Length: 78
Picture 1 (cartoon, rainbow, N blue to C red):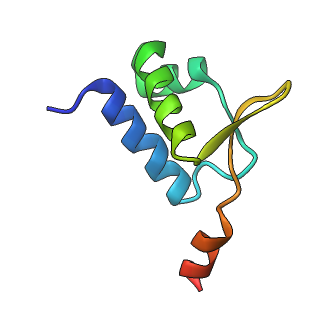
Picture 2: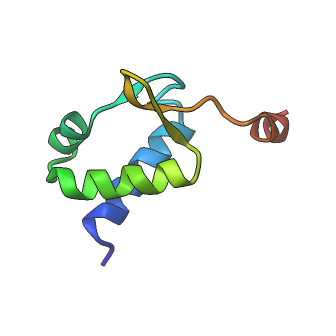
């Protein structure tokens, strides 16, 4: 069975890929935890992993936001 952090990671990653979470959209730990019915710890772990992969990024005075897709990803879509 996957850990809660793994489950949250998969959910957020899927939401980004499917466009449910859009580029520039702010990701708040507390809101995600409440929406997914988990504590903030697995959300925090999942967001760290997504940041390391380059899917989200920290912005000054905004917190974590969904990144615009890299150009190579856009080329794959065409």
